[in-house]
Amino acid sequence: MAATRSLDLSAAEELCSEPGALERVRRAYANLEPGGRLEVRSSVAEHAFAVRAWARKSGVSVVEDGIDSGGALRLVLEAAQAGA
Image 1 (cartoon, one colour):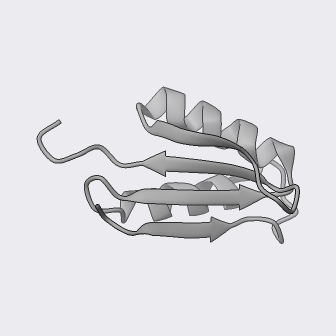
Image 2 (cartoon, one colour; image 1 turned 90 degrees about the horizontal axis):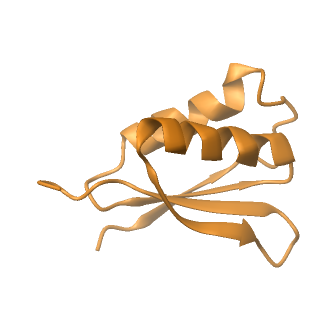
Image 3 (tube, one colour; image 1 turned 45 degrees about the horizontal axis):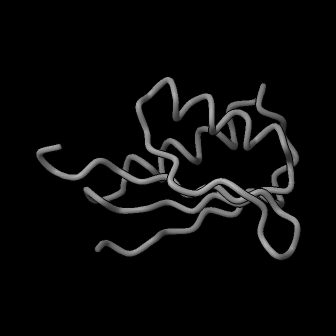
């Protein structure tokens, strides 16, 4: 299994209407190997909403969706396996 990469958006204050945070997620996801995972953390609820909507629209699997021990929203995205 490929390693999980982490992307912490907690320091980003822009809302989902601004492309910065979601664009960072898209770029990080695009660099995953097949079967790789991207963990996205943010204290901004709009970031999680935007990532969920983008994932649904793009056919990206969200394999974990919750709140971490520090109270930040945590989503784990998984890249499709090769040949799947």
